[in-house]
Amino acid sequence: KNLGSVQIRNVATIGGNLCNAAPSADTAPPLLVHNAFVTLEGKGGRRSLPLEEFFLGPGKTAKKEDEVLIEISLPTPPKTAKSAYWKHTRRAALELPIIGVAVYLDVDPREYGRLQQVFDLPDSTWDDQLRALNESEVFCKELRVALGVAAPIPLKVKDLDGIVKDKHLNDQLLSEVTDVALQKAQVRDSWRGAAWYRKEMIKVLTKRLVLICLRRILKEV
Image 1 (cartoon, rainbow, N blue to C red):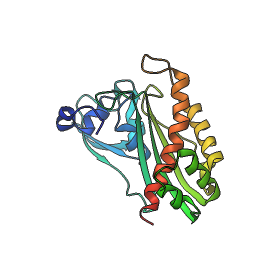
Image 2: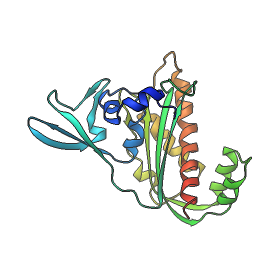
Image 3: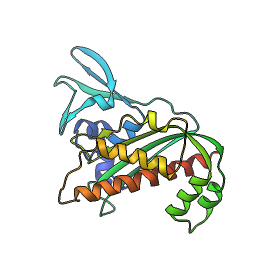
């Protein structure tokens, strides 16, 4: 509801948002964490490539002049996986993100412990939920993170599998994940936000999005 404006949402397309290749494109991080593919068609025929290979630089993509983007496809995720995106802005609409973070989470829940109980409390804080996660026996099958406004192009954070696979999902593990994300990011100062602030929000929002994904997973248990 806070992407662009009502008029833009009724006229614009996801393909147009991707082909614009802005680092702030809101649709890019959620699609990146879902390992999306784009299909291009032109005089030379049709070809598909991973979305993360589509972005070449600010305003630059792998699309040739005679090609159009005709399809965006996503692999079907397992039932134990959920995703979430957080657009961090000052205003509620008509605003580019200060930072955008998307998370995809697939888990092996051996024991949820107090997580469900804490999630159900109307006044539970993010810290309450993290403490409950630390006490649970939820193990990570896969965790993907993508960032907007953190590099010249929408950025999918690589090299996370070796850190998270089959590991106990807790605050310490998430701190290791955010450390990798910050190493890959190329945040800068701008009038929307300072580089240090963007780094802090990457750490905060990544953890919050993992909790949001867990809440969504628990709803289907």
